[in-house]
Amino acid sequence: MKSFLTRFGTVIGGMMMSSAALAQEAGSSYGGNGLVAIGAALSVGLATFAAASSQGKTASAALESIGRNPGARDALNQPLILGLVFMEFQALLGFVIAIMWTLK
Image 1 (cartoon, rainbow, N blue to C red):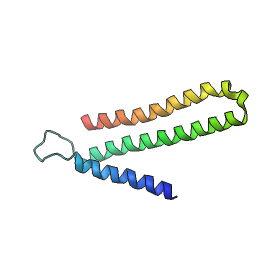
Image 2 (cartoon, rainbow, N blue to C red; image 1 turned 30 degrees about the vertical axis):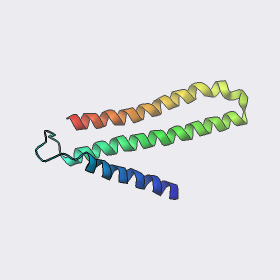
Image 3 (tube, rainbow, N blue to C red; image 1 turned 180 degrees about the horizontal axis):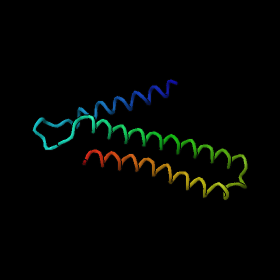
């Protein structure tokens, strides 16, 4: 629980600091409002967090099963790589959605 609260606090703190660091003056050419930026930050942050945590759990489970049964290494390799590719695609999709919202 302490680990989760630390990670959650880091994500929230990073979002707050990034909005202050990337703030623009009132006469800037950016036509969107602040809610689009918050939505884009949440999109990237949550997609990246979900992909990273699921990749860690997948790799952990695969290595544990290979450790218990070394003969199953060849059978686990292809599904492991395919699963990691889909998880990475999830993170990239969150980034693409954030870019589309920001440039709208």
